[in-house]
Length: 409
Image (cartoon, rainbow, N blue to C red):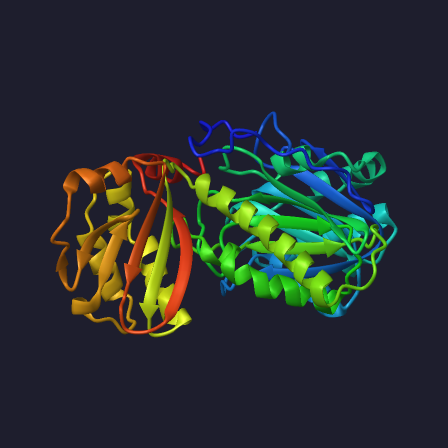
């Protein structure tokens, strides 16, 4: 667990994830960076399991991201996942590739599978060689003692600057068959779309083939993990993976059953992504940015991200200052079509600006009341089209600087 003070936005309770047919987990203290806490997770699938993944768009992607992309392209099913915290194995050159080889080979032996059926993820410090030989001998023992009741421990083992473990679950009925989706995630800083500094692993017992699983994940990531930002920095290591064990033995998903599954999956992904926002390093407030009236949905999202990533907007929220002029600035700098005299801005349900000037009924007291909330919605209506988008972020506080000023020490 993290030594950092738990975020004031943390969930009051953590869900208990049920065992899920076809997957087992185990964790260990491997001493990769942290003392006295788990930092290694092994997930083992009883049968070859369908797998899908979405990864960082960074041109400096980590060695595990490169490994996973190749494994996905091989077309093989998944049999195991190995995740370590404390070291990102990124920008580590040939040593990084060697570390992934060592880990995959050891896990393949432990799980009795092909190396390309093993998926890897690492999170932590960039540029430090990862000594995989240090924890590779643990993988066989972890595989043997793995069980289906380890979701909470799994979420804890992958944390870095997170202040709480992130878990979500949904159990629902499809055509008379009970189906479950369980998910865990980590992320707190270096969070920006495409994707965010985050790892997330979601497993369902539904039977879904690879191509459909990938289509679902790729479609849903845009409105969930790619709609959050903490600090505008895209990580080298972002990894979101979705596994389908087939343990529920359901009929093939199509039509209404596919739509239902997709909505339940969307809910789990959104839940996890919002937990990351609420655990943003030093965060005290969650911010929803809603842009309407833009030239297109793409333009709306770019404007929303311009607002969400503005240090001036985020610090104003931290200081509970209803400084709507900073939102005007962020809309104007986004590079998308906008008309100053058609722009309207709301803080919560209080319209603060309209038609190119301050709202004639503007009340500083009413706007300030909104800014004192833990959850704040900022709406900007550009007024020139039908494009719409929502993104989520958090405020920027002195604690963010403190956490990142001594991250490696």
